[in-house]
Length: 542
Image (cartoon, rainbow, N blue to C red; front, side, top):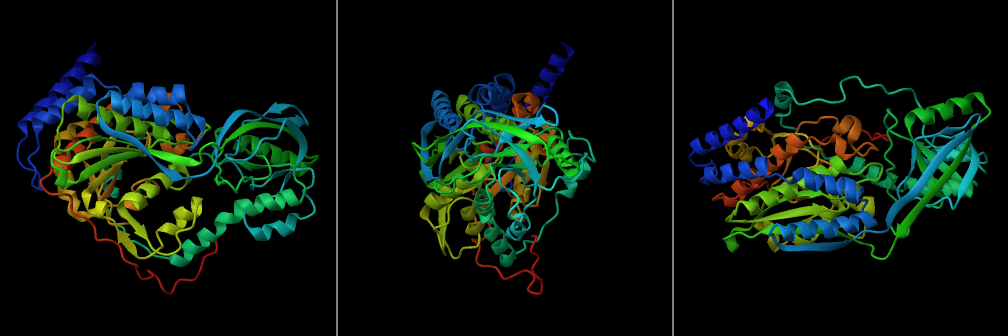
């Protein structure tokens, strides 16, 4: 009861503070404090964010791009948007590749003693067509030059291709929240670095997985195994050969680090252990397009453009995709529901996006950029991960008419942690504006406006063409240490209070961006930069 009274008191205090604060935002928009009060009430007392997240995680489950579960999620999210009264609900296709899903799998050591191992099929590798049984060989290979060392030794073997190493114990607590000092440390301008030669070397190495598969097949191997990148019996099963013509010939499994090292130790002292692998997977080729999902709250001024918020709906398959990125998707959807339920009629249209193909190279948001906002010169024929790595190095940028209409984009993709503020993404002109927008939400913990840029998620290619694209600062919790891409990415690890807070913060920021008299200051459209360090020598390992 005391906890309920404290929660009610906190909500009333927030409402009182918001109502008392008036004035004009630094970009010229009068903030509607009454609207903020309604957003807080709806998001705190009538929240649906955890109901949405639970359905995605427990009922639909993991949502690998183009899998049957992802198709279910595409239909279900559109139905929810329509149920909540949003308009222009639709999906947009882009070329992707094969769908893939796991029916069942098992990896066992059968000698020198029987042990059920923690393992998962690697995404987009084929079935074993029953059970295969073979001895292992530890043959680490990370470069094409490694093949010569193992030629003639792999026939009839399950090849362990990762160097086992030793235990990787954590040096700091797995679960944490950002301190004031850590937030302050994020507020440092980072000069951009341009090293096209390094980017070219990374691009060239993308074919290694295909070359490794071809080498193992030619040498007569029956399967291969890699080691999970984290201890704690966690697996992810990440794989990237999703193109229609890229499917590997050999089954592949990822084995938990502890089990993998045990196998390596046994193989070292001999005789090599024998494994049984049964991988029953399915490919889904009926529709090789992937789909982004969109919905809108229509603005009152058609000439004012639109603001946008997005999160990726797709996930890996080892867990349920709850934190990555069911949490972000649920908060995007909840912000849409809150704004619709409170009857907001913003000046600019507010568009909500649920992206596909993020885990395979931000391909859904990239498709949106190229379809709506801008294209880039150079060879546009690259597909898959090559498309991701090569796109930012193509020049010139050619803008489309809609480029000027997108006033701002906000992204959520770092788990279920509390939103602590906004990354200004090296755009110092927005800092005072964001601080003004967040001021009424300070008691909720959303106070930080930090200059540094972020990468690796769906605002990246918008920034790359001069659109004001932003990511939220979030408490890390145990996202990077345990949850991200792992087999324990389940509903149990989501934090309900944080997600309710995040939905309120997002709804408030979106409404202020949509009602601002002036759009946010834009960075210049990038032009081809000079090499940052023309005197640097190549590092083959970068």
